[in-house]
Length: 584
Image (cartoon, rainbow, N blue to C red; front, top):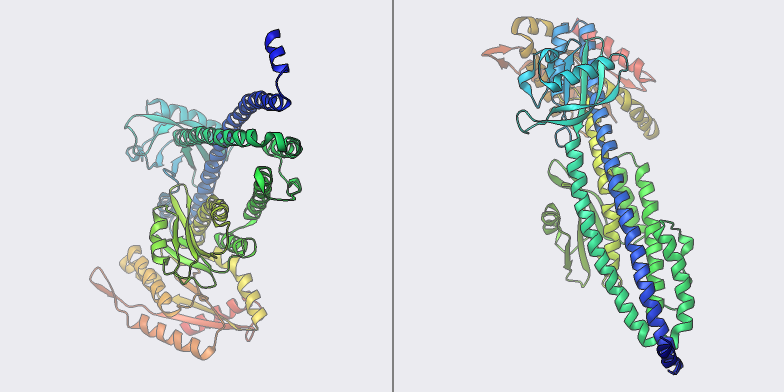
């Protein structure tokens, strides 16, 4: 050992610096990468646990929302019974029909049973519907009975039990978490939940993906480390002092980044972007700037209440932050991609190719004839296509490759939020529309009428409030049955849609056989013409049901805001009186 030290001491100063650097770099590399991999692995485990918690919370939210939608359906059916429009038994059947249509997620549904244990609705095991499961010998039924007896005391909560999985093995049960509520008026218990099997499967898939990414990132992180070491070895003697000063600053920032501490104020001062250190500083600054901007963008997304607001937010980002003047944003609706925002003009002619590519999850990148670059990004949340964005980048931008990656990060960050907003809107619409006719119900009218009145007042325009009541509708029900009455209501609803086609026209099923129409920017002469055409069509319809022609007539009354009344309730009262006057 002494001989080795003596031999090294005789070497040149240059050799000593290089040798010291190599030894130090080797030690730092082993310890640094070891610490880095350890912290990354620990972070990955936290992300997996966080993913599981997020999935549990999301599924609990969907289950609770589904139960609340079911409760609204039951309330509507109960109101019909209380108003004497249907019997209590019919109201229960209407409620069960409505509840059976609630589907969400992979296997989401709502089940219903009586206090006494009779299962009224259970999609995964319809064979037990109509049976008293409390008396069945199988273990799942006994456990559920014990849990539900506790629920009588503590209503509206999550429970965990074992149940049969839809499309699973016949007699195999899986752990399930459901949100349950009792309906005292019907003496029912309703619930909706999710299987922990689905959560475990999703977490396992996410875990495999994260582990694969961890290995890939580990390999990728080693490559630049080795390259940097080689380059540093060649220039160390000349640049060692200057480099170490810069590296110390970079190390401080890197430590903060590893600890998830990030701020725009962490950007490093740059005198030049030339050389390895200058580029490293520039890349770190770009990363800090883009990550800070992305975090702020995600905060803004959380404040959005609708899909449209999120699309406007991404459009504003592309225009103001990335200085793009030509792009289009598309929204997926009913398996079609429809444009919701267009900025400038895209003259490349790749739009149709783009719309086909995004359905396969492919990012389309093409060269335009005018030497510009065309890019089209799909927006996916899981396996669900939420939309697409196409854009044109200027050919003189030298940072296009990096810019495209950054833009893609921002675009994909909105996918999950879009999916949540869409699911929330779908569940909300279930409670705002009449199931039979597809028209909006009174609850929706109460929510939207203040906005309609405010808009009309701002534009100084008239609003027509039209009340329509079908004549002798009870006689139709009594003579031909309720199914025939339902056909008449659907026929009238379609006639109303055909006559009042403007997007601003609002058609509401107001009561049993009553319909309400809100016509914005209304002109009395045109309104009278429309109502006459509608009445003539109904009078001449000759609707045939079971071989019998059913004659349909209607009484109509209307009033104008502000000509006849200053507020909606008064206009509604006047329209109602006019309708009954027409009936006489």
